[in-house]
Image (cartoon, one colour):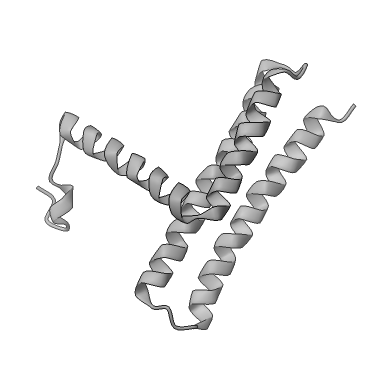
Length: 124
């Protein structure tokens, strides 16, 4: 048993099942509470199927899908950072602003990666 946290005692299949449920709960929370997450999901719903019909190599297709999914990952982290900052305090503080702004900047970079990756692959 892990002495640091009472929540870390599960092992084996039980741990995998618990982790799967926590992940599903995380997706639900992000989708229900975060407009930005829903927007990134919509981008993925549009771009990933489009990528299936493009005349690109399998590697290029995989990269196009991966960068789209990467933006979802970044948005999940960004939303988690925002939730923790808000949980600590809703007071305006320069460090809270920095944390939220950096999360937003990370998402801007992720969306830029989608744009430039697709542009480079599809540019004639």
